[in-house]
Amino acid sequence: MPTDLDIARQAKLRPIEEIAAQLNVPESELYKFGPYIAKLPLHLIDKEKAANGNLILVSAISPTPAGEGKTTMSIGLTQGLNRIGKQTTVVLREPSLGPVFGIKGGATGGGYSQVLPMEDINLHFTGDFAAIEKAHNLLAALIDNNLQSKRRSLGIDPRTVLWKRAMDMNDRALRHIVIGLGGTSSGVPRETGFDITAASEIMAILCLSEDLEDLKRRCGNIFVGFTYDKKPVFARDLNAQGAMAALMKHAIKPNLVQTLEGNPAIIHGGPFANIAQGTNSIIATRMGLSLSDYVVTEAGFGFDLGAEKFFDIKCVTAGLSPKAVVLVATIRALKYHGEVPLAEVQQPNPDGLRRGLPNLEKHLENIRKFGVEPVVAINRFTTDTDEEIEIVKAHCAELGVKAVEARVWAEGGKGAEELARTVVEVVERAQGRFKPLY
Image (cartoon, rainbow, N blue to C red; front, side, top):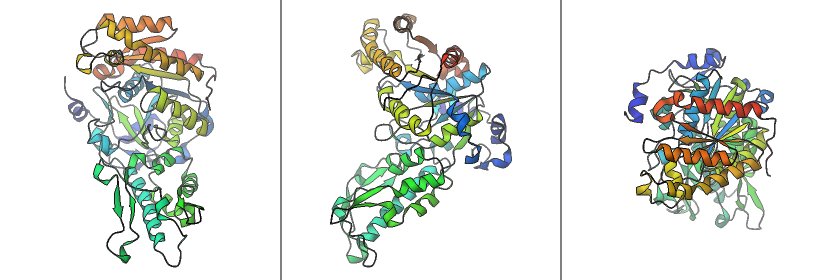
């Protein structure tokens, strides 16, 4: 079997104009970054259509070192839906260079369920992360400049400043640092540090913003610290919001690319789910729903983290109503939850698998609390046995949930056709039952 990189490099990409044409977007509306990437203008969004669109969320059981494959499943399901005649766009987050160069790796799917051009998406892409990083660090520079300003000082107590700097790379040595050394011309010495760009508050803000004006307003509301007399200071007090928004005037536009099978893919934003909402931008999701009949999207970590934030934060903010949840599970991950050592999860172990099923069961229970019907996607690996697959299917059937085997890594959209048909059945039964818990 060729590697993900080999598959991506051997693929024949379609010009981005052809991908846009599938969405009825003319070439004149595209802001192109080479032949295979383009940004989409915000005026293409139809909020009313988006609010009533067929939105499918892909989530997963609790994460394990064995991996579950939410992104790969999202792309594969999108390809499967298109193969059965449903016009579908996948909407995903942008990769962060930290994980790309770390143990996790890229975030463009795998096997025959990838988004392309894979290398460009994983490495810098259209510069959105760089723009967010610059906007973040502009505010940091304005704070430090104000600390030593004689004419415009706001009286900020440097000990209370919470705003750090940002860079899109894993660098532990910069987490806690001292700045302002070198004399009076070099600033006020104080403790601070760097966050990775995906953890920036501005990343979370961009992904919740309606448009550039809303982004500017939200940036102005960023809390900076307190004055010596305990009054709060915000970015707007430093007149930072206009310049910050200007740096992101292109970053706020979502990016259009394609799947391995030539289906539209919109990729935009990338907040982590453990410290932010863990899902792509409201703008990107609305764009997909405005231009497609179906949208498949994902949220970070397990359902209890990214997906619940997707529901309670993103959907509430944007007025979105998901029609179905696809819960990804792997046999090896369930065995790991059943206390099977990681080194042994690829070996047949029906008893260990059964011990891990309560994890799956709890996530299904949580999904139903939101009034959305779940479908379990069993992400099949070559080491899985038919007996183990049937154990999961039978257990889900007892719970009144359909579990479908999917081979999206090895077969792409073909391996997700049964899953796609099952999801369509669930979507067509949905009657606006989604109800957030908060």
